Image (cartoon, rainbow, N blue to C red):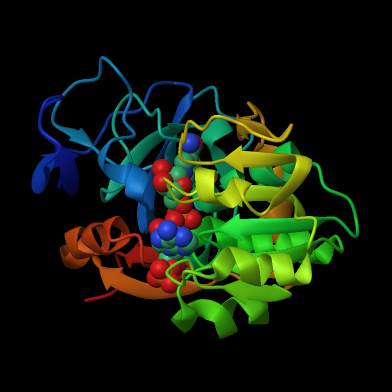
Length: 309
Ligand SMILES: NC(=O)c1ccc[n+]([C@@H]2O[C@H](COP(=O)([O-])OP(=O)(O)OC[C@H]3O[C@@H](n4cnc5c(N)ncnc54)[C@H](OP(=O)(O)O)[C@@H]3O)[C@@H](O)[C@H]2O)c1
């Protein structure tokens, strides 16, 4: 009864992830124990783990669940609360496990109206989408090109931008064009078409105000459709030599986004922002979910549910 199942990295050298059995973590006086109901899946999951940690280390940085135990110093959450958890730096292990020990600053209350799979799908893409919007700092009427707009982050950025009156051009393969338009993209292009840059220029001859290069390797081409003196924001660390007075920078991490994420959670709960989950996997199928996200062709988000057989 003191054991749990968890997906772990077994050493710092190996990127393999294995299903194993571990002790349920003991909590300190400033921690809570969450029984995981669902967790989100992303390309980061295999490698986003704290440095100098102990192995085997359960991976995972976003989940939803119920608090089953709390330390004596915890005053802001109660046993039985439904919560969303967001952190990639949990010292006792991440949330690809039946239980996870967390500090309360990694938790957001989950509105009753949200399902566990929805709560688990929000943190990483939601936080990154908000940080991208903040770094872009665009105004109503500005134009934004997004490379990788049909994925987890892009699905949210299209909607957040369109809601502010920003004109969005989304890039993905043609099977995702109707999808991107349904989220609010004004124009869509297919990155595999040799004419996609001309297609953008046909609508915006001087180029767009800014580009968000979400997928790795897309910053250089995205810069071609940005106007002189415009901006390219990268999400995956692309390094590019800027031309024509364009600035190229990585999106800015902000330390305390828990509040902003809380308001995005409420917008999703009220239906203002649409959350798209391409597929919900059973716990036993979690590695298939990881492999799917690693193809970089998922639409929206992938989630693992502990309640699915
Ligand atoms: N630095 C950070 O803290 C941080 C945080 C979060 C994420 N990230 C980075 O963000 C990236 C993942 O973002 P995500 O989760 O939104 O991705 P994702 O969900 O995996 O995106 C998949 C989508 O991208 C489209 N796509 C694939 N290749 C493309 C290309 N060359 N041009 C345009 N679209 C393309 C696919 O459409 P088709 O199937 O139609 O091709 C698919 O719908 C990762 O590289 C990750 O490292 C960084």
